[in-house]
Each structure stands twice: as structure tokens, then as C-alpha cells.
Length: 182
Length: 182
DNA sequence: TGAACCATGTAAGCCGTTACATGATTCG
DNA sequence: CGAATCATGTAACGGCTTACATGGTTCA
Image (cartoon, rainbow over the protein chains, first blue to last red):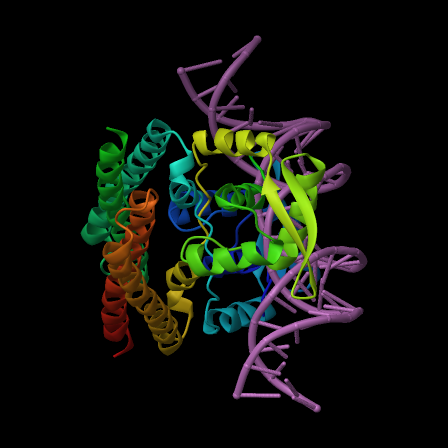
């Protein structure tokens, strides 16, 4: 089952909650899944068409505020496909970490550049960490009763732990690189 | 500078150390970069040809043990290109974590399946952690004097911290999922 | 002698991105 | 009135994977 289109299942998953337009899907991904998932709008539309052709989603053409708007909803087949996918173990993604590659080849680079790369990375991950901690706090405050709560908590925790490890590692790397430079 | 071929620079980087064949490159990636990088052999060959056409590598056709063998080495231009790439900040990869997506949609999945997914993941990351700790120990033992030592140490540490965080998170997730199930 | 490894490649094709194209509405 | 947002798409194409193809060598 390699080489499958993960966008299809991400879309199916979001439609599982309720009917949405392509534009909506993009916004949900950005607002709620952004720390572990990404979709580009131009890819969502053709996938939605394909899903429709396959009978996994229904399409309702409509208008909202004078603008055209196509709302998609899961069909029975779509729900089955989603559930089958959920039951399958996710296949591990082959890693490709550009920062680590550059660091691995660090001897042939300018130490100052490497330090800059790591600092940028650390700042990004630190910002992410703070954002996630805010999300976690809000989740604890007003969503503990939601049926999705345990699942959301798990994904937020993954982000927090990953970001924290990244920040700590960056500090260590910066220390080592500082010694190299001097 | 988006949409660039990272395989090109990975190859350039490995050739920086010394001349190698495509097959060699694949083996080096597997043996030394596997916890943060991946290349497939079928992709290496055409990229090598392209690099050759561009004048970034030289190609020496030869034979080793009766088998044909093409050895590539960096040209001056290739070295310059590599160094320019190393100086550029790595662009952050848009995240796509399938396991987290499935967990996020966990309410619509079978809890037992999710537990199995996380366990598999944890086992994989735990094995990785142990392997990396072994590598770290060996590095400390017999490579502290190598010029590459600080850089290798940094990348190994990244792997260890990431794997450790992943294992810890998995345990937490398993606990939460256990409560959900019962 | 057959499996594992060494060694190089081509072809097909999917996934996803970037760039391009269009047009309405809202709001400062 | 212009920028931001809502809203939907197509075209081109690059990156990488999978499958396929070939053939020599080593070693149990």
C-alpha cells in the first residue's frame, strides 16, 4: 500500500466531522493541524474532484454571500474508506532532514553559517513550543469534556515534546559549534 | 530557492569526502546517514548523470573485480555549489505526520488499532534509540580526535533526543488510549 | 548451484508544488 | 478605492518511487 495519496484521507477525515468546501478544508488544516499536517489549496481541489468521481464524497453546489461555493460531504463509501485507512498502520516516512545533512557535512561549511541555521531553527521551534503550550492550556480549560479531547491532547503533547527536544538539542548544538568556531 | 533537488546536494556532500560510485553513495547513506536521510538507488543514477552534464562532477569509468564501475568525483564547480548550498538556511519542510493525523481523527477509529499503531511506532523508535546510543558510545571511544567529530556528535545527539522524546510520548499516548478504551 | 551482493541503469507514473487565472465581497 | 479575504480552479513540471531490466562475482 505504498505511494498512496495521503491528501485523500486527510480530506476524508476532515469531512467526517461535517460537510465543508475546499477552502474550508484548507483553513481547518491551517488552524488545527498545522503542527503536524499541511495541505496546499491547489492540491485539495483536484483531489476533491477525484474523490467525487470515485463516489467517496457528495458535492452540493451552492452560493454563500453571492460567491460560488461547493460543499462536499462524506458518502457511506467514503466513510468506509476512511475507517479502513485509519485501521492500517501508518507507514514510516523515510527521513530527510536538511538541517542535519548540512550539519553532518559541517566540516566543509562556514561555522558562522551553521550557527545561524541552528539559531533560526531553534527560534522557530521555540515559537512553536510556546504556541502549543497555549493550545494545551486552553484545551485543558474548556475541552476536557469533548469526545475528541483525549485524541487532541495526544497530538498536542506530541508537538510539545518534539519542540522541546528540538530546542534543547539546538542549545547543545550551538554550544558545540561555539567551541568549534573559537 | 524552493523546489530544489536535495538529492543533488546530498550526493555532492558525500563526494566531497572522496570519489565514489552511485552504489557506494547509496551504501554510505544507509550506513551513516540513515537516521536523518534517505536516498533511493534509482534516483541517484540519473542525478549523477545530471551533475556530470552540469560539470559539477567528473566521471571515471572503470572496472572493479570484473564488474563495471563508474567513479564520480567533485569538480571545482561542484565544490563551490556545495559550499553555496551549505551556506543557505535550510528551508523548513511542511510537516506530514500520518500517525498524528490518524490519532487526531482517533474518535472515528478503533481504539485497539490506534494502540497497535502507537506501539509499533514506539518499538521502532526505541530500537532506533538503542542503536544511536551505541553509535554515540563508539563515537566517544574512537573518534573524538576526528575533524568531523563535533558535527557527527551533533547529528547523533539530534537522533537520540528525538527518539527519546518519541518513546516517552508514545508511553503517554498509550496511557491515554488505554483509558479511552476501558 | 543458488542466494546474496555488486553494479548500473530506464520507464512509467504519482504526489504535490508553483505559477497562473478569475472573480465576488468585505471592510478600513 | 484598495487590500484582504472568500472561493475555485488549471497547467506545467519537478522530485522521487516503483517496477522493470541486465549482468557479473562471491561464497556457502
